[in-house]
Image (tube, rainbow, N blue to C red; front, side, top):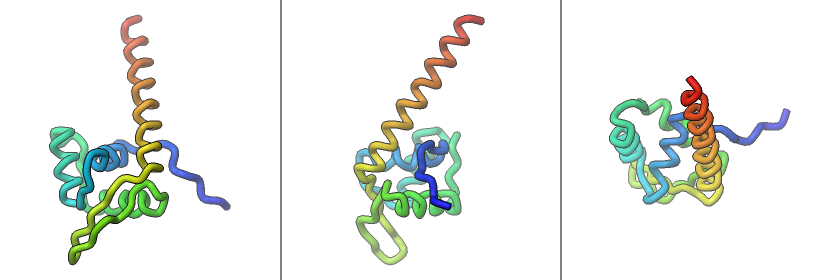
Length: 105
């Protein structure tokens, strides 16, 4: 059975890619960015983070750019940027649908 490509992101996955849009970051910097950006709404523990990072590397969405001891730094790839933009567009459509329906209440 062929492995299906990643098409839809979880909330945690979305924020990991978001954290890498403007700069390369290591794991602790990614966690800090997500926590600050979401005011703690999206918890990102080590198990979740490193599972996401491994999957993203495997899918070619991010790449490792530096290793200093246990500290690994990551950057988003063009493929990762494309998936991020696709997901952002999908989420905006969801919000538009919700807003339209709510106005009809």
